[in-house]
Amino acid sequence: MTSAVHRSIPASATEAIDLGYLGGKFSLWSWLGTHDHKRIAILYAIAITTFFFLGGVAAALIRIELATPQGDLVSAETYNKLFTAHGVIMVWLFLIPSIPSVLGNFLLPLMIGARDLAFPRLNLASWYVYVIGGAFTIWALIAGGVDTGWTFYTPFSTMFSNSNVVLALLGVLIVGFSSIMTGINFIVTTHTMRAPGLGWFRLPLFVWANYATSIILVLATPVLAMTLVLVGIERIFQVGLFDPALGGDPLLFQHLFWFYSHPAVYIMILPAMGVASEIIPCFARRRVFGYRFMAYAILGIGIIGFLVWGHHMFVSGQSVYAGMVFSLLSFMVAIPSAVKVFNWTATLYKGSITFSAPMLYALGFVGLFTIGGLTGLFLAALALDVHLSDTYFVVAHFHYIMVGGSVMAYFGALHFWWPKMTGRLYSEAWGRAAALIIFVGFNLTFFPQFLLGYEGMPRRYHSYPPEFQVLHLVSSCGAALLAVGYLLPLIYLGWSLFKGKPSGNNPWQATGLEWETSSPPPTHNFERPPVVTRPPYDYPEQGEPA
Image (cartoon, rainbow, N blue to C red; front, top):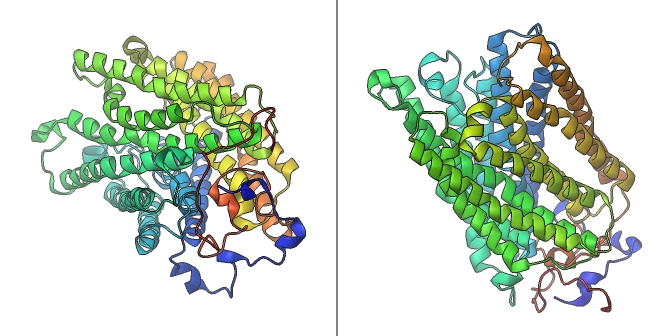
């Protein structure tokens, strides 16, 4: 890389810079028919943000219901549909596509010095497929609802549910094809379109994370598609696949579903790890500690993640010996995750740390992900899982990983690359305030649920014994604070689009090819094809000249 990585253009100069992919005369077709990966990323961001707040509305109603033990806001049937809607929207329409489809789409070509993704038309098609699948899913959830939970467990989905299961299955199935398209595009782009000099061990860790995620998407998502199709066939035609009364095997569904859905956890968390690996060295002004170990850990998580699905089935009746093997493998997958946490901590050690908004989000991610990972070891232990399974302990663990991890990192990424995406700066004070509010609100919401689960409170109940009310009330108050934290970025980031100061090309003085082009980047990304001559994260160590 050239020394331009360490220089930013003065704010006054940016006013004369072309607005790149945001510029030109606006027309709806110029966006809906675009092949520019950056505009497609913005289209994804709009759709995903819409789904995020729809899922948040369902979560708010759940927490209002649980503030009192009587179940006096909605009926049990409506409550089932509410937590299903929340889970389906957040998992399938937000968490899985959020970082890859928005940030990955925008940044991957920029980070490897390419003009676009390998298949621009396929990229646009993936967005249309995602929106169509999302529309089917939302329609199923609104027009009658779905009451099976986001996992569509049989026999609920095949025998007992009178809700729109087939329509919801179809929506999730379509969304899955969008994920496969994106994964193929990222893999081919990473292999074939890297700039001269950009070898595998000069790639940013965000690229490594999206590459590993794409492999999981391509290999695991077809298994989910097959499983959902089989559920639909059994429900419509009464073919004995999972129903034992028809000669089916109910455990077969769980094996097929979790073979995809546990790797799907890493679809959500690996890109978040990539985000933290970009932000932490930038604001610590340190090279990433153990870069190669970090890259290998990313691949290790992706590989071992395919081998641990059975820890979701410890109380399902599967073989005790299989449970022991899955328990051991579940402890093993924690090792590469621990490597990453250690390396992030070592990167911070003796760093010149700046607590800007992106850094606060990244540090919040590391803390919440660590709590989620450690509590996952509790659930990986056979004896403990028998007590904790299907309690609020599982809900808390899941949210510390998925929401505390993925969502915290998603917001950190938006704040870090927002100046590059828009050419504008947001209010740093409001950014820091929102990060702190989200962190506090999240812990108030979900930490009490560990205690509820330990004390035996089952999940998915809309009424409960009065002795659990205090912890539920604290959790509901935390959710209200969390909602404020999530709404604030929508306000000040939106304000910055119109009133924010010009950012310059590299306001953070970060390394990486994406910071060598203008903000926002031109349609073709780079005026001249970049040539990479330096390692990633080449921040000067103490005593070296900047």
